[in-house]
Structures are given as structure tokens and as C-alpha cells.
Length: 193
Image (cartoon, rainbow, N blue to C red; front, side, top):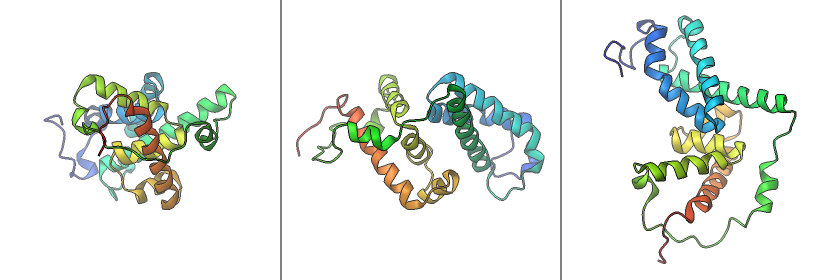
């Protein structure tokens, strides 16, 4: 955080739009990038969110923490951007369950990885593999995965943001994790237990 920025716990009135943009722009961009799967769309959403911050920071009532508010604004902007892109391209997004049926079954014995992925994330190549696997998830599952396993939100928070039931979030998150595991399994040595 910039030395001239107020602490995160400061009241909204302590922040200027410039401080918020300077402090949170990278976080906004990375969340949008993970949700949308490409740099250009993430840049568009980041710009849109930062413009909203400049216009609406004075209306922020402080009922939640500033990062939480920015997170919600970013998720909503990314989802809206995705809908607009689909309309512009004149195509319907494929039903993720259709793709799931075409893929290999998700059940079966899974052996533990010999190297835990979260320990390897610091390695640049591994980070790229993980980012690419996230980008290949169907949007329905990618949203839930990013919000839960990347951003660390609870199932209830995700359900509220995406307008889903908690049970639907749990189901999608489970499927997303299985898809990620399958996508990354070839890159990590597995050992029999």
C-alpha cells in the first residue's frame, strides 16, 4: 500500500479516488483477468471499475470494508462485461454440463500429488499453468472457483454475489476443483498411496 494511502480500515471519507485507484488497481485487474480470461477484457473492466470509484466513492456508506465493496463492483463489472461480449458476438455460451458429459468421468480414485500445488505457485511456470487451467474452466465454474479458491470468499458470500444458492455454489466449486485437478494432473507427479 502507498505511504500516502489511508489504512484499509479507515472510513471511506479518508480515501480519495486517486488513492483508491493507485492502491487497488492491480487487485481489480487480477480479479477481472482471472474471471474473463484475457488481458484486453480485464483492462476494460479495470478501467470501468476505476471510473465507478471516481464517480461513486462519495456514495460509499462504509457498511462493508472498502476492499469488499471494490471486490463486489469488480465481480459485477466482469459479469456484465462477459454478458455484453456474448451478446456482441451473437453466440450463446455452451452449457457447462454439456461439456462435462463429453469429458471423461469425474469420479474415480485420485492419488495425492507428491508436490502440493500451492507450494509451487511461487514458481513462474507453475503459476502460468494454473492461470491457463483457470482460464479454460467454463465460465460458470470459473467464477465460483476464482471467488472461492483465489479470492478466498465464503460460499455464502459467493452465493450472494452471483445470485445462487449456497448448495449451487458448493456443487459448482466441487466440479471446478475436479476439473482443475484433471487439467493439472499431467503437470504434477502423482504417487500411489
